Length: 61
Length: 217
Image (cartoon, rainbow over all chains, first blue to last red; front, top):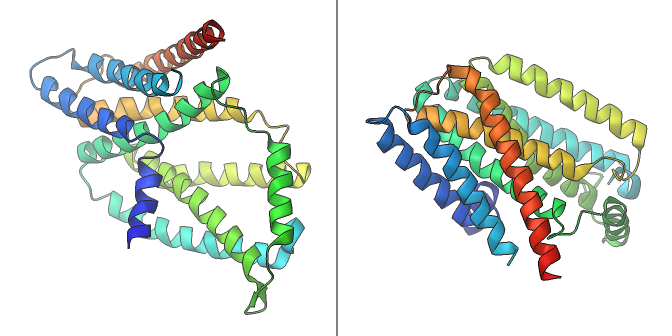
């Protein structure tokens, strides 16, 4: 059971769990802003760029 | 596996994994069509983003020199040596090592492909069309494998990984935002703009990390 859970964790989350957490937060923020702000489409692309950069910088220190 | 442990066991493992994948697709395909499209796009977008950013992250690190490029020749040599020296154990007339390694490889890699094909097909409303596209890709890969018959050293692996990462991240961003309730300006016409943004940002990161590497050297 533990190995099964580990397989799915590795399959979905991969090397850097912070990327998955960042994406979840960004999607949540987009959903909240989309109810009141027509330009909320800008949030996710910018968040994706930021999450990717933070993940890259952790390796390239 | 075919070259080192015999084609019979390798092909049996490949066929068994393909049947398992077909069963998974047959079970999941119809199930996906009953999920509301907004929920599906949110979940699929999130998963594509996580997958896509993993691919893109590795490709950018390799392209900028922070991670070594995969040397397919040495990987092939290493894997071939490991397969030749592995213990021989027979089950049901098959070399168990050759069977299980082939089964595991095809199933794990195929699972990711099956997920992408099913989700692309269901969010765009045509799973059969997505399956036709995937089948065409399988035929092309098999033909390439037969023609090359060796290590994939001539394939620009990191460029392919970069392209896959860009595509998955683009579709993940587009569908994830739509699933979260966003209306893209211009609807589907904004997809190429998102693609351009992801490409520009990724290439920019490659340049920035290359400069950082040179500055630290």
